[in-house]
Length: 214
Ligand SMILES: CC(C)(COP(=O)(O)OP(=O)(O)OC[C@H]1O[C@@H](n2cnc3c(N)ncnc32)[C@H](O)[C@@H]1OP(=O)(O)O)[C@@H](O)C(=O)NCCC(=O)NCCS
Image (cartoon, rainbow, N blue to C red; front, side):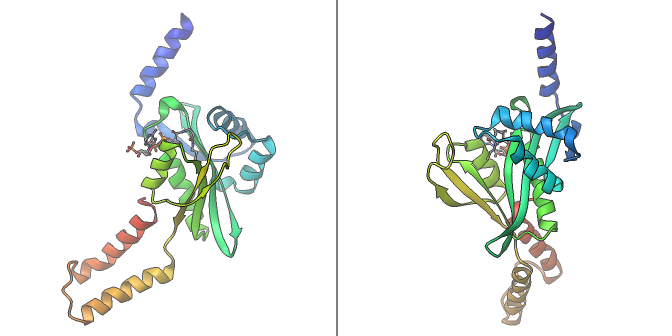
C-alpha cells in the first residue's frame, strides 16, 4: 500500500515536472559512476563492463553529463573524443533517460551539452551508432542534424543492424567562403533578399542551424 502511494506520488511529480526542475551536472567523480551504470544497464541492450565505463569517464569526464530530478539521476550521456583517420572527432557512446522522464527534452539537453564541449575542444564531427529499429534515438539525432552515414550489418550482440550517425561541424573556411559568395552576389548586382546589415547575423544563424540546431 505504502509502495503504491509512493509510486502514485512519484508519477504525479513527474507529470507536473517542469524543465527547470532538472539539474544537469558534468561527471563529478566516482560517486557518479554507479548512477550512470545503473541507468545504462537498465535501458541499453549492449552489456558494458565497469572497465568500459571507467575508460570513458576517467579520460573524458568533461564529456559525460548526468540529469537529476530532486536528487535522483534520471538521465545520462557518456562520450569520448580523439583523432580518427586524420579527423578530430567526438563519439557519443551511451545515452539514456528513464522512461517516466522521456519526451521532455532531457536527452536533447544532455547531448547538446556534450556536443558543445566537443566543438569548443576542436572536434570536426561527432559520430555514434544506433540500432536501426530505435525510432526514438534516430528521430532525436535526426532533429539535431545527424545524418545516416553507414549501415553496419549485425553490429550489436542481439544481431540487430546499426546506423552510424554523423554530425559534421562547419569549418572556419566554410564560413568564410559563405561570406565570399555573399560578397560576389552583391558585386554582380544580384538583388539581396537579406539586407547587407543583417547578412552577418543571418549567416551565423544558418551555420549554427546546419551544425545542430542549438
Ligand atoms: C532515446 C532517448 C534517450 C530519448 O530521450 P528523451 O529525453 O525522451 O528525448 P527528448 O525529449 O530530448 O526528445 C527529443 C526529440 O527526439 C524525438 N524522440 C525522442 N523519443 C522519441 C520516440 N520514442 N519516438 C519518436 N520520436 C522521439 C522527438 O523528435 C523529440 O522531440 P519532440 O518531443 O519535440 O517531438 C530515450 O528514449 C531512451 O533513453 N531510450 C532508451 C535508450 C536509448 O535508446 N538510447 C539511445 C541509444 S543510440
